[in-house]
Length: 401
Image (cartoon, rainbow, N blue to C red):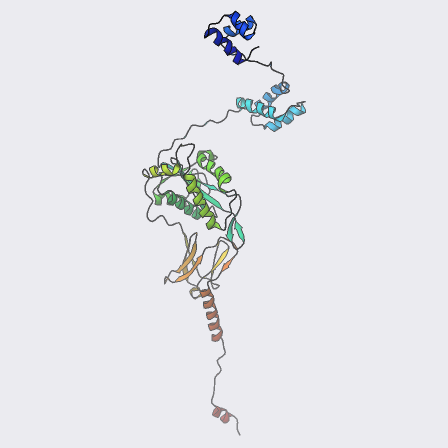
């Protein structure tokens, strides 16, 4: 049997140079029958090895039977069953065969390509870093990044939070929208506890935020996380590209590095959309509504009475209050950066502390400590016994000389 190169050479000599079979035989040395076969066949010669019997062949019927009973049975379990029947072949050939035949018994889900209109949707989700975040005072704390992605431009943003409560989710969403620079028509969430009230309905707090922003919402069906596939892929990219070889001093440093990374990522060419997200975002903003000015207040507010031991407890930490306001009601305002309290009746400042995300700490304002000491001294002075001082002449009258 001749090779493809010689086969092509024989055909060239015959059909281009118009040589006879006898002359081709003389020039190449090939038998005339071999030359005639090369000229008659239009397909190049191929060497086909006769199929060999596989070690897996005797067990294929059993594999089909088990897959018919349970299409999801793992390949490893099937191999164990076949080994009990005498299979001694390799793992790779077995797994490849099971992967090939399983779709006959368990049809795979198919997907249509999703197309987004500019400014239509913004997807939200939570991503948890691999390691706890340093929060100062020698402590680390479990945190999440609330991520957001516009469907059309694929522009990406994220915000560090330390709980899944609605007040932190509201802050994270507002910050992400501010970084994206405009409002989409709808916000997309899965059935996160603080977002979903049941039956596909939003919680009151989430609906209130959407109403303030004048946007709609979509809450995905249960178990349909693949509907946010764009964000799921970004979360894998965060694992492989953002996290490796990074160190963080605290949560503020984490946020600063994350923001810088998203700016870089938004400036790269995106393989799916075949464009740069940052450039598409500029065009998408023209189709989106501007952010409200000011943005909805996401600080947590509540009222409480200043206790006799003037400290406010929040997130396991104690923050000092003005002791002169003991027994009076104050309005507390808690943001991601600060904790403040103001007396309801007079508007006096009860406290202003930097918020700490470390736990189990006590923070005392030096001014509050001085006031406590002054009040304690005044109370002590008020408890000293009052001794009446009488003139000595009165004692002379009572005691005869």
